[in-house]
Length: 146
Image (cartoon, rainbow, N blue to C red; front, side, top):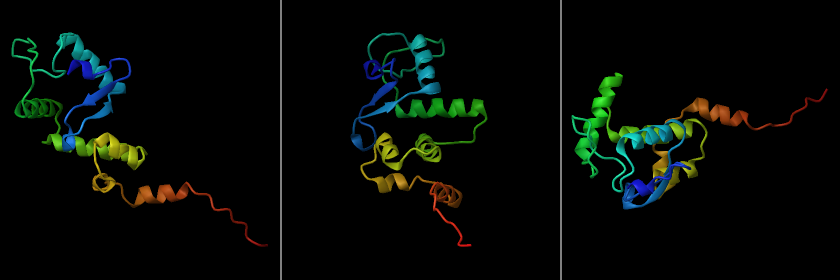
C-alpha cells in the first residue's frame, strides 16, 4: 500500500512476505529514486503501491497479479538483454549481493525474512577467496627470534 512506503527514509513495509510475515525493507540509493519516480507517475491516491499501467499509460489503482508482475519482469529483462530469470532469482541475487559486500548474515537473514539463519546460508555463493580475505582481517603478531 502507498502508506507502507516512507518516502523520506525509504522504509517499506512488506506485508505477508516470505512465510506470510510482515517485515521492513529499505529502498535506498537507486531503488528509492526509482520508487520516487514511480510515484510521480502513479500519483498520491491511496491504495496499492504497485499497480498496473494500461497500454495507453493510464495507472489503475488496484493490485497486480503474480502473473502480471512476472510479465513485467520478463519484458524489462528482455529489453535490458538479460537472460531469462525468475522473481526468486532476484531474491537470491539480493541476498547474495548483500553477503558479497560484507553485510553480516544475521542482518541479511532479517532483510530476507528468514526464520532461521541456515536458510540464509544456503544462498551464500561466496567461495574460498572470501574466506581467505576474511582470514587476512586478523593480525597475528609474530617476531622471529633472531
